[in-house]
Image (tube, rainbow, N blue to C red):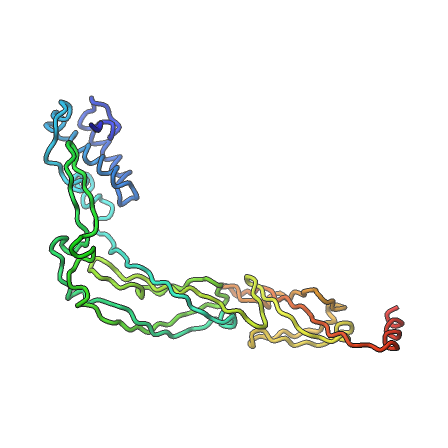
Amino acid sequence: MTDLYGVLGLNKSASNEEIKRAYKKLAVENHPDKGGDEKKFQEISNAYNVLSDTKKRQEYDNGGKQQGFHNREDIFKHFFGGRGGFNNNREPEKCNDIIRPYKISLRDAYMGVKKTLNIKLKAFNLNKLKMCDDCNGQGRIKNIRNMGVFQQIFEGPCGTCKGIGSNNLEECGYELEKTLELNIPKGVQHNNKICIDGCGEQPKAKNKKPGNLIFNIEILPNDVFKRDGNNLHSSIKIDFISSLCGANIQFNIMDEDKLIFNTSQFNIVYPNKKYEFKDKGMPIQGTNKKGSLFLEFLIDYPVLTEEQKENLKEILK
């Protein structure tokens, strides 16, 4: 037989006041609404139900069986009021979120865009729902099993309505059309998520609220630029003379911004080397800053005659 005094952390000589204090402390710590274990909370409630009642306690001490257990929530109300004093006015349970991929170009991620979307959702007219009599529209039922001194309470989905709370759900269904504006911020990253409240799975019972629609942003590859975090990488062709003597360059970034510079600022431009241009990369989301642009110069070397080669050697001496 379970040691009820041990469940409350007491010995057999505990006073009624000690039993109350122990129960109050343990019930708060183990209440399911506060993340506690349901089974542990039930044991604590059952222990208090027996030991707080003089007649039941005496029968228990003499090894007898107990009857007439109170609901564990009724016991808790005695101390705190409401259901556990934590969540008497519970928030409606949220329906499932719907996650959808949404593909955009790198340019859209660079610029930031607004997209208008038309979506269709399966919704239900909750005012026409017929409440399930077996669970009173809650979608869940409690089964009580007597186990000698204890009553064990199991809670699960209602078998009649399959946990929905009503028996005519399909009759109440309809197609809900919505027009959404999807705001994609500048600098959005690959796999960032954008949430639209209330546009996910729709409620099938009055004690629930809509889920959310979540777009998982997927940024498509770009032919000119490669993204690395907030930085951009690209390349540009120049001729051999420009690499040595300098040249004015105008480089377009996403067809929106321009980078204008002269290669002479690097003295000589070398192949297989990337040159950094700060604040010319991707916008950093939520700020007015940008990452860097790294340019690699693809040098177009001319085909020289022997005479030209000799002349070049003389020049470079």
